[in-house]
Length: 627
Ligand code: ADP
Ligand code: MG
Image (cartoon, rainbow, N blue to C red; front, side, top):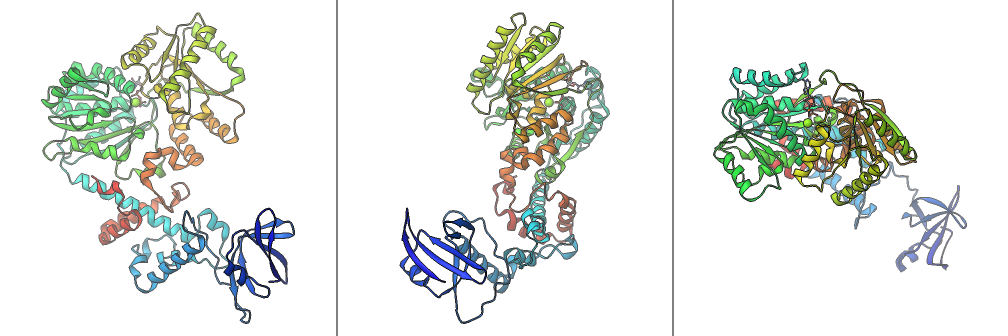
């Protein structure tokens, strides 16, 4: 130390000049105590750590960490690198380091169980033991491969991620095992009943639909509850499969319920399923949040005395005062909009210790890696084939300067007898703002295209009004439907062949894919125009490019996961519950097969390891206590 001075510039600060054989730096302290000032006097030996920046007189370290060294002893450099922790409010870096040091010492002397290795060495795919991994990461050797560590791909990090993923997998397995110990009524409709249903369907099931129906009926015939996720791209025909499952429950004299996330979708299901099932003598009850008073009471009574076999509606189906005489199957459509807790709550509407079978449908394909982590409590069925006669949607991106051209194109197409959607997007969740935006656009388009019949649909309309608009569009009484994203799910108008999505850069890929799935349902070549506001960021351009490249929802979901991470893809509700600390489903995807094998081996060969592993990584996370 060559000298220390308090200087009074714009701010009072303590400047110390420090030098060694290689040169000089200035240490600058804005906050310092008298004791600190005394300690930093000329002649002391210091070791400092901090970020060096150019200052008025050469390199400068502002508020470095420092340690005063014994001037006589030759002090060796520490043998390890110093880890940097995610220190936060109230806990400083050095304090955390000290606490970690204490914890490590404790784990070595008094509490070896803290780092007890529950994974036998044979299960580790060339990874270090837990103790070695933890010690390595807290005290990395001076020659540690920094880049590998920064990427989170060092074997020590992978060791922790591996164990964390195993813990998650085990906890979901446990959840599933607990549900499956419950009893469920075996469901199998008389063959003639199923035949009548199939004969009345306006189409024959695709091979993929048939295979999935077999998977489901095998589950339903058992006396413990089915827990199955049905995945299928937009338009792959999940509703018909759902109906097939419902027929099994209804045909064997039990009740079933179908829940949809929005009223429009619930209403579409009611229309479709009453056409398919009422001829078989099924009575359908209808429950949504907007249904009140006498009308609601009548529906509740029909469900309670079993007069209605099937209930269709929104989450209102599962409120506390809704009682079923004999609910044996619950079906949830578009599950990405329901949290895991909701999916657990639905299991409790059975009667007399019986748990209903459960089928969850999703049109947002879940990338395999995420499914293995987030949905290991469910069996999976995939409809991997679209019904015949579909033409892939041709997707183009167009800058909004060319809006007049797009409007002209719509005019031309509609005059030629086609039908089109114009979708307005807003980031705001507010239905009111969304509705306003759609109203403004509708007014503008009506002005520009006075000879077209233009309808408007948004979330602020009453359910009956929404249905009237959708029905008019379906019946060909409207040429153009201006809409908010309320049409994302459930609107099925095969004749519509053109869609314009305004400001697509505001939406996630999965949602865009879902919206685009409203066209391309009939035999006509369909187009989707992504009308973006220029200029696009590089990332946005890349994302929209993916939609142009492919119509395959599974590919899109994988790419979405790469670009946006699991939080955005699964939705905050689900990832909030995932709470991964070390593991990253994308980065660590390569570990997943080994995770699955290891979890299964542990559960059978070392059941004693299961609870401590879950406790170590998940604590008492609410989700896992609940069944
Ligand atoms: P999603 O999987 O998106 O829920 P839907 O069940 O709404 O798809 O089906 C999309 C459209 O495909 C509907 O118009 C439906 O009638 C039709 N469809 C379903 N299955 C078949 C099939 N096997 N053959 C022909 N059309 C089908
Ligand atoms: Mg559907």
